[in-house]
Length: 40
Image (cartoon, rainbow, N blue to C red; front, side, top):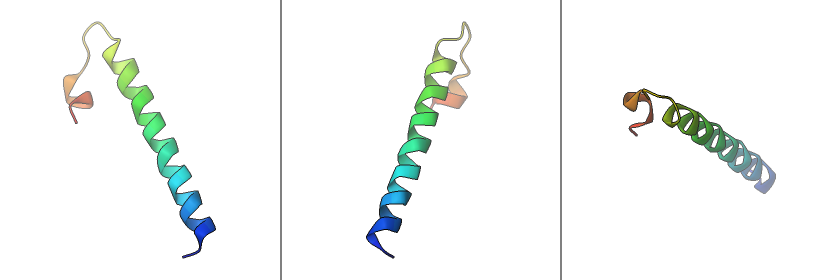
């Protein structure tokens, strides 16, 4: 695989991490957060 392909993969994974962090933050702010969703 080319360097360009690796870079695109890394950027895609970084975006997914950001999305998950946002979901965890939103769930943590709830009155009764679902600990099962943010446990990992």
